[in-house]
Length: 116
Image 1: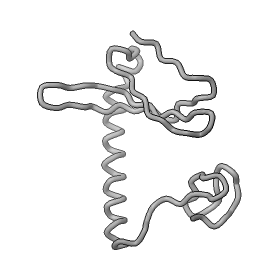
Image 2: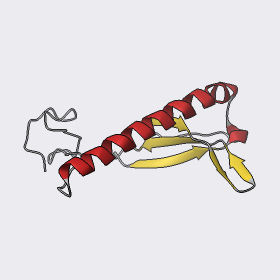
Image 3: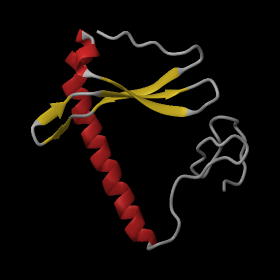
Image 4: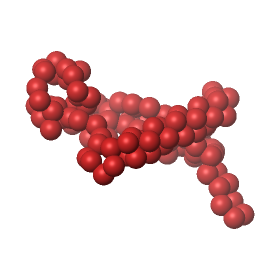
């Protein structure tokens, strides 16, 4: 079993299970989204042979929820794309700190600025 460690200042933002397969092979990786101390995101993977008993127990539940959320978001963004017919649609970000604004107050810097 490989031991995973994060550098000082790194934080796991989320982890999710996602079945992967192809002709003659299959895999059960757990994907991690990690933010470093500078705020940069990266993706990492924990292979099945390195997963703990707790991760293995939670795997099928996480995979089912991840698939349901991905399907729901795909439906949402597909519907939005058709409603706005080619207009630029997507998340808005605070010009001050690049935090997600979504049309309101920035949760990172708490400033209400016009998003770009």
